[in-house]
Each structure stands twice: as C-alpha cells, then as structure tokens.
Image 1 (cartoon, rainbow, N blue to C red):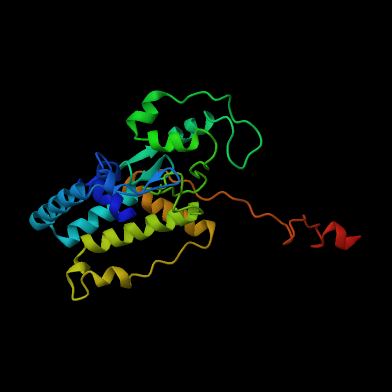
Image 2: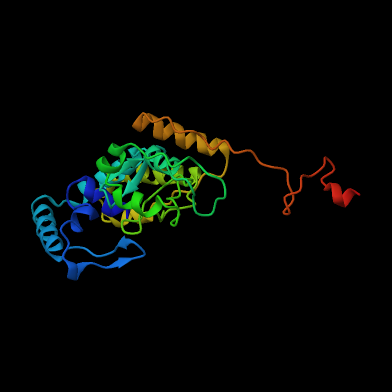
Length: 254
C-alpha cells in the first residue's frame, strides 16, 4: 500500500478513484455497498503510462531514495494515507464526518444530531462513497486511533494499518533515514548494492533515551518535531487491579 501510494504521489500510478471512473457495468463488482471493480480500459492506459515513465526515467537508487525520503517526511499525525484518493486526506475530515452521524455502529450514545459535514470535505477529497456508506450508521467508521492510518482503497472504512504505535512510526522513520543515508553514500556503490539495505540492522528503541536519540537525529534531517512516546507505566496486575506499595493487590492483602 505504501509503495502504491508513493507512486501515486509521483504521478506514476493513478488513484483508484480514476480506475473506477466511467466503469462499465460488466467490470463492476459491488460487495456490501463498496465498489471492488475497476475499468479495464483505465488499467490498460495506466500500464502504458507507467511503462513509459520507468522506461525513460528508471534508476533504482534514485527512486528508492525518493521513496524513503517521502515517508521519512510524511506527516502521519495529520493525514490518512488514501490510495483510493491518491492523496493524503486530513484526519479531521473523517472526524467531521463522524460528528455528522447520529447513530454510530457499536455505540449507544448519539455523537451529533445528524449535522451534515461541509460539502467541500465530501467533494474535494473524494469521500462521497465513504460518506454514503457510513452516514446511516450501518457501517463502522474508519479507525483513526492508529498512529499510521492507511485507508483500504476499496473497503474505505477499513484501516489496513490499525494498531500501529507511535514508537512503530518512529522506528519506521528511523529505518527510512538509515536506508536513505545508505543509498546516498558511497557504500551503495559497493558489491552489495541494493542488497545492502536488507543487510542493515536497525534495532527498535527500547528505552525513552533511545527514543529521544532517534527523534533528535530525525529532527536534524527533516526539521520535524516528533513527540517522544509519553506513555506512563501503570503499576497494575494482569487483571488490571492496582498494586499496593508492598507489590500485592488489595484482594491478595485482605
């Protein structure tokens, strides 16, 4: 998904919405209100376009550098990665749609009194299909709790990267930086070539100190202000009961 989205940002691949535009009846595959089909004519034109670009401009080191640079600098906190739209969609737009829905699936309380979201949100960011399928509350909303939110290009209320943590994003950015530095340096001209990226071992940060070191390193290169994971350890048992100072639960002590 990340490769596809990157190539969409480089105008190598089209957004999925373009492949479904003017789709013929015989190419349509609709499941639970979502369109999974695409125009075979659009696919053919896209293939010709991609072959032309890569035939003229393909240099593996340059393209990989651009890929890693793109995701090193991407604003994951603000945008949803949407291969359907081919652009990053602000998370706040999905939040605005959520606030417009009266009865949300899986929740008993009303979020809002059915207030319609601003029209430009629906039209400018190609969210009409998503809105139509979730506005009545019969379909779940896109999960925005994940630090990395990649929207499924067909089933648009499904986050394919759900559960990705802030530390995971930090580690991913660090891997992008290490790979980019390798490709830009003289090491990439050795006999290892592209295989050298795979051989690079980048351990995940295990402590707050290691997280700060990574954040500072990335900040110097990108100018980004990345928050260090500020989660506090909770002194609880596996059952969720708080422990006393003598390391026993209230029930055990009693």
